[in-house]
Image 1 (cartoon, helix red, strand yellow):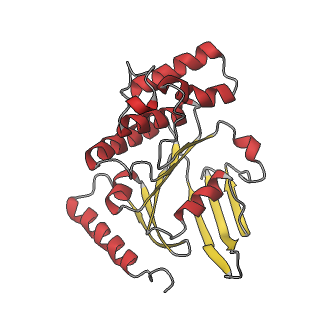
Image 2 (cartoon, rainbow, N blue to C red):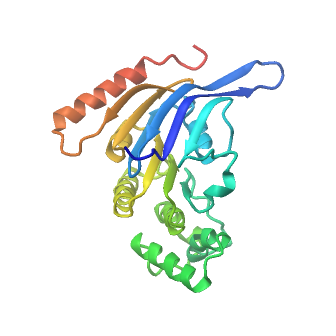
Length: 256
């Protein structure tokens, strides 16, 4: 078996609260793996710890206990080893408003000291693949929400990362735009042999994107796991959808 791209082993994360309000357990003895080339959708209600999991994988925070490994490295302690190897797409496009679409895509390549001529060709190529040819010199304010998010996706892919992390990137878009971008995202991940973790709170989105869906309860722990079969009949997919709804309904409300 190939080495997993992501491995969590009994990972817990506790945040210290101010004003004597006690500690917040955000992740509770969480264990899972993500194989090379796999798209895993992490699904759960708002506040269940999905974003904390995201930040642990990205190396932005350190676990309180347990082990997080990305490509065999500790993402928090070996943060520099992951320069250019992880692409991130956030809920907001996070484009720099003073940079054109092309300049925004070039940002990561510039940080990696890519040859300027090569960087230009790569950035233009990704904008074209994402349907933005002719908009290279447009500033974010002149682009629609869907177009801005396409620029964000192009920026993530341009550095040729091994792993893509997506934190509800389409939640602010209308459903038709979001559907088109979901399909485009999956196609690009498949074509380029990437591994991806996609965080969402929408059941249909998780099932559409993920090879595997991890359903989380608060504090982040896996309450249910489903492997998605693209060729499965509608009835089988409906059963999984209903099972996920049942699992999510069993979670106690915040403070419960």
